Image (cartoon, rainbow, N blue to C red; front, side, top):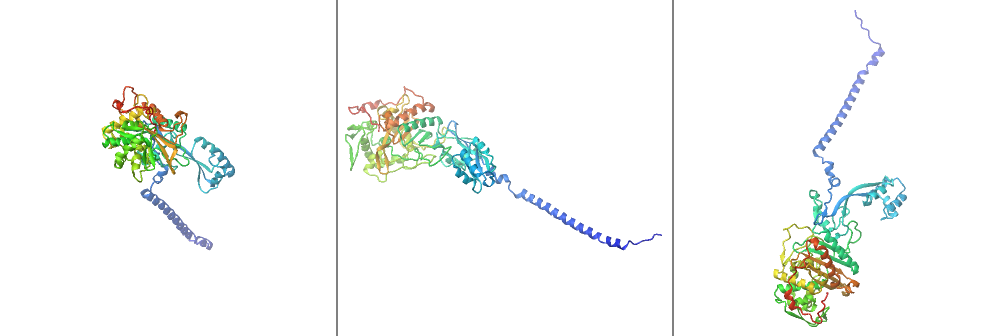
Length: 566
């Protein structure tokens, strides 16, 4: 028989609370599991949202992280002119500096003296990140890093390097610290140079770095020798408009741009270019049929009075002169009479055809012209010899190209032109007029003011121009603009060469003369001699323009032993 014995009362009371405790624990565990599950669900949901809609961080930061390097620029032969390389920046986080700021500022001034210790101290106490040096050399980075200051940081960034220094400064221009082009072909080619699809292919310009160096060297020496205020020069392909060389002095260093940059004297500065306009006047009267015979003469026996002014010649012949003699002796008087027959309409027509009434046509920063405000009889007489109208040297170069290339005007370009892809030209003169101008320009060099550019074998033709410098108070009697505009070889012209000096001072080399025949004409002769072979023009003493028909037209009297060098 089984007997059931009840537990003691104390035991019964202790056992009564256990189910309740278990129930509470189970509820707490359930709440914990639900909270953990909810957290897991939230994380999974967030990941799903990010996977479906979020933009990858690499895409958001693409500009900062994978910004394409700026493309290279090369000359027409592939010689590098501008390249992008790795460089360093040095910066400071002032809030992270742990050392003595005064001492750190002193040490930084020793390593980077472009700022004073006081300026560095101010940067070290500024709020937020500050640049201390951009485009830093590796050795400078190492020296600053050796200071051991954790608040100073270093970072690599692309650096634009102009491999030829200031050789082609005005052609290339430069870039801003933020990496965009602000001048020259850097600005013109901004879109092309920053296109990732084309970054690996250098842009080839029209210039030839060898030719550029020769022109820069000769112009620089002449500017220094004659103590000129400025200089300009260019070499232009007469059939394509390609600029093979362009020099403007004083220049700047695109690797270290500081201060104000002077204007480009070739494309932005305008000058009265004097007697270099006389061949243009001659071409206009020949082309319009105003002068039909080279033997026709114009009165240059005495100065030509216009109101209270007189038109005079530098070396007066005091006789009647025909067109060849007018150009050889650079007669202002005869040119004025020729210009009067051409008339205002004739001048406006030829100047318009040569684009003298608009900005210099080139893919660079360009200036306009100074056109006569009021066209009087005096204007008609003087613009024919470059007085009263101001243009850029580039305007003049393009005009001379049209004079000699068969009569076709084309705009200039700084980009290499592939064969058969030259810009469509505009006919401004007949081929017959152009052929005549080739003869006359060659005659000026063999018999007249251009003799100092008569390099054997290159058949140079051209015209000097010496114009009084225009200023705020009128024309200067002591300062002039000396220019020689030339083309070669004249039997089959290929290139125009322009050299200009602003306010040269005569020296022993020029026998005290400051006119173009003594200052810029020899420069062009030396440039042609140096660059002709580089441009594929081989000197040939057996070839030349036929000038025999002019021999009977040129009378060498007692006063004609010397041609004017104006």
